Figure 1 (cartoon, one colour):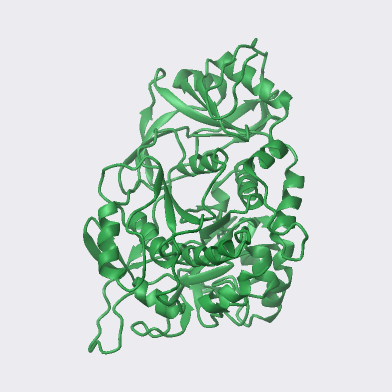
Figure 2 (figure 1 turned 30 degrees about the horizontal axis):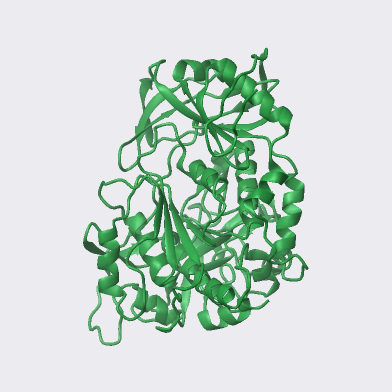
Length: 563
C-alpha cells in the first residue's frame, strides 16, 4: 500500500473491505430555516467531504495542555511543536488502513491529509457519496445574506459498523455557513460635541485601555497575529489603508496585511471582515498580521473546518488568533463538538492563543420540552479558548467606565463540565450574585464564559471606501483584546520568554489582575414572564457576562510579562 498522508495527495492501492451499514453512528442535519432547498443534486456532480479520523492519546494531550499553560508547572511555556502533537494524536495504523480501504472502495479520489494525519479530504461524485454514507441525500441550498449556494444532506447519514470506531464525523454534509450577527445602530442624537467622542475609533480604544503612542510592535521581533473569517466576506487592502489614514495617525502601524491564507476574492468588502482586520491591526499596532480567508470555497466545504485543518498543517503560525464565529451548542452533534474541542486543545498545546467572540445574543434562549432555557454557543463554550464578551461606555459619548453591552454572549455550557482553572471564580459568582436566574435555565456545573471583555458598541469601520459608524458586536471586542495580547507577546518575546499561549489557567490564577472590572449591567435572554428578558448580571470579580473585565494595558503587561 502506498499512502502519502502528509501535505500532499494520497495514493490508495488496497483491496476493498466488506462494510455493512450500522445504525450505531447517525448524524442529523440541524433545522435551519434560513436556507431553502433547490432540489436534489445531480448524481454526477463532484463533492468534497472531510473525514475526521479517530485520534489517539487525547487524555495525554489534555494533561500536556495543563502542564504548558499553568504558571506553577515546571513545564510552563514549553510548548509542543506540530510534529510533537502529530506523534501524540496520529490515528492508529489500523484506523488509517481501514478508512483508506473504505474510501478506495467508494471511488474517492484526490484525497489530501494534514501533518497530524487525523483529517482526510476527498472528492467523490454525489452518487458515490450517497452510497458511501447510507441515508445521505444531497440537495442544493441557497441562503444567507449573500444568497450563498451550498450542497448539504437534509437527512441523517450512517457510518458502516466497521468504520464507527475509526471516524469521528464526516464534514461537508450538514452544517451551513455562518452568518454575521454584527449590528449597525442608528446614529444617536447628541447636542454639543466639546470633549465628546462620536463613536469608537482606535484613538478611543487606546485612550480607554491606557495605550500610549509607544505601545506598538517593534517591527523587529518574530511576532505575528491573525484573524480568521468564515463568512462569505472579503476585506480590501484599500479600506485598511484608508482606515489607517483616517484613524491611525497617532501611532506607528502597518497599513497592509502580511499574509492572506486561503481565497481572498474580489467582491465587495464585508463590514465584519473589514472590522476584524482594522481593529486587530490598530490595537496590535505595527505587528505582522495574517488573515485566514474562506470566500470562494467549494459548495461542500465548511469554512471553520477548513481553518482547523490549516492549523494542523502549518508548523509556524501566528501566536494570537481572533475568531468571530459560533454555533448554538445544541445544533451540533456530540461527535463534532468533542472533536472540534480536541482541535482547540491541539492549538493550546502548541502555545497558540485562540480568542473567540462570545456571541451577540446575551444568554440566548430556546425551548426544551415546552420550557425556556438559555442557549450557549460553541466554540465560545470550549474550555480551551479564551472567550471575549462585550461592553459599552457608561456615558455613551465620553471615555468613561464601561458597563455591560446587553448583547454580550455568556453563560454555561451544556456539553463541557466546568474546568478546574475556573472552579473558584465560578463558585464564588454562583454563591454571591444577587440576580441569579432560576436554576432551570442554565447548567451551573458547565464551563462558564466569557473569560474577558472589551468595548463592543459603536465602532467606526471603513468598508468599500466608505467610513461606516455605530457598528457593534463581540466581533469588535475580540480583535481588540487579541491585538492587546499581541503587544504583551512582543514584550515577552523581546525579553526571551515564550508567548502567552493558552491564557485561561493564568488569567484565573491571577484573579483577573490587570483588567478593569465591569460591575454594572445585565445581558438579554428569554422574553418570558419568569426572567423577563434578563439573563445574567455583572458584579465584582468574574461573571458570565464580561468575564474578568476589560484590559488596562500597563497593568496587564505587568501581570503577564513574567515568568
